[in-house]
Length: 610
Image (cartoon, rainbow, N blue to C red; front, side, top):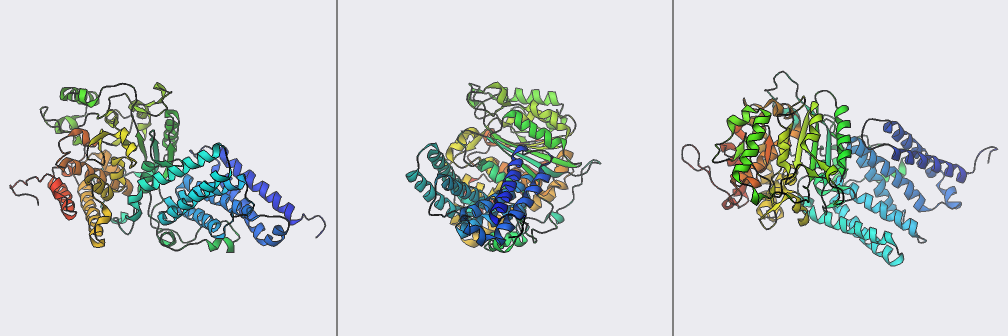
């Protein structure tokens, strides 16, 4: 050994300490806002790249002086965590792919399978396995996710037989969450991807241009805030079923090497042959725009939600829009129920709102007072569960301060907002429309009552007890699967060709509806600006589909508590009563053999549509 040089073991330990220090530094940065996190992430990547290269080049010498295989696995696991957190920061799928590569290498080489395993090492293996399941779910590697879940169950059972304490109960709870989550999302195992697919969805570059912008430029989705707060909701880690589905609906389905990897090709061998911690070179179609950045907020306080929303609005680029998705329940305090509301009370509420907002268009297009069916093309519903001033985002011990009120959102309407509220109290957020502080907001609002598996109505806040998530969010993210769930049929019961046709019918119809929307002479400029973005356009079209399915259903049609709403009004061409909308819904129902569940309207000449 040359004078002044350190033994390999000491050099290795110094590199480990430096890398772990850089890793720990990242925890000090909040998961929102443009700060110095990017600089420190690259510093951490560089430190781990150096450490990984050094242990590869000196593996034999280090093993001779006591290096354990689990230590190599821990380094690889930290690198995988770095890539995963970088994906959360940027929504760039290539970093998610890199994370998968390192986690898969740990599994294939059994780095954590040491014979002298202690409680600390057992916990490392359990945490690695749980994190790997999240990665596989986000990459749609569902078979591997199920395999890892079975492996985790065995590890948890072994851990419980060997060790005692609170951690045993915690890991059993984690295992229950995973099983519940995979069961709730089982319908997606054999369906098309929830992400926007260049192979299955219309090419964004050939979509027709929006015409009615009134001198303003179209908007592009830049940031999405996905927040969920329900008690007993289906979730794994800090990813709830509803936010998981919405997250996928706001991303491009990977193509190129990422798509091939998802369908069978693995890249685990690259971990051992490469000395650098890098990213895949061949990624998704370069003509695709980047995924919008997403903030995933699990059970946030109202203050934290508004802080993230304010940060996103402050940093929003010109001609961009922020999507705010909130899935939450109402207060558990006593309040006015649906049965206590009369039509006159509902009309009084709507009339007051119209007068306050001065929305002439709504007043002109609403139906007569003796038959209140739509408010400006947004289905009029009364709350199915309770009338409260806001959404409840707190524990049972924390009242008032944890209500999210519509007035809390108003200050942020100085910037363009696309708001989705999935709650039995969503109707109160209609008060935002017409009261904006600078930019007109657009809103998609869930029904106050949801159809459960038995075909009966239940408040949206109670739907999570059924372990299936909210139907409104399901329609916005996976319309065909949601359609099958609503009608009580299995999407896997159709032959392969039959299963393909309904999806193709939906895709083709959405293209036609999209063209009708953007070329409409009556469309609100607020809607016209957001329809330029393929993700937002897809959400709007799926909303129209859901609204039409409910309105035309023989059991739920004409019942405002089951109908979703939107603000401002969409063009009359997209009403459930329009011939083009009815024709598609009934054609799909006929294809699946459930046309008898829908009402058949007559066309103007007296003939039935089908």
